[in-house]
Structures are given as structure tokens and as C-alpha cells.
Image 1 (spheres, rainbow, N blue to C red):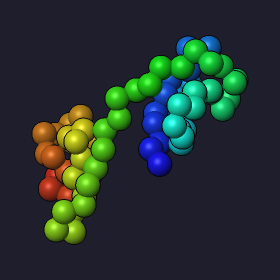
Image 2 (cartoon, rainbow, N blue to C red):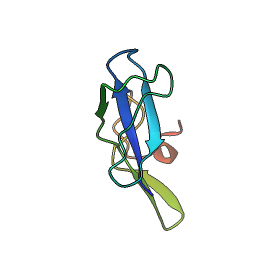
Image 3 (spheres, rainbow, N blue to C red):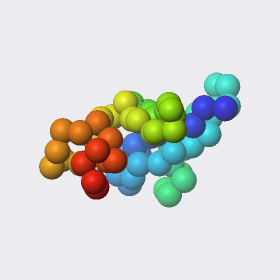
Length: 71
């Protein structure tokens, strides 16, 4: 069951929703139907460490995960 991230043009909120089949997403805040699917970053677990496709969450360093830079 895929969970997708969306942005609502009506209220300018971002949200996640579980989508089944051809179901259309609506904003849970304002019930707006003008929503855009966002490109989601994902993470995976490998050898007990979590890594992200998004790279570092910090803007202050270039580490690929926070355990190497201490944040």
C-alpha cells in the first residue's frame, strides 16, 4: 500500500496519504482536490544503519548521515 506525499494548491499544505488503486487524493485540511504529487525521498536500513536517498538532513555539512557528523 503506497503512501504518497502531496501539496495542496488551495491551502498550501503538504500531506501524506495512503492511496488505493485509481483513488484520487484530497487534502485532509481543506478537502481541496487540486493537489500535486511530490517526489518523495526514501530511506533504507543496511547493516544496522539508516541511510537516505535525500542525502544529509543538515545544510551545515556534507555527511551522508547524521551519525558521522554528530547531529
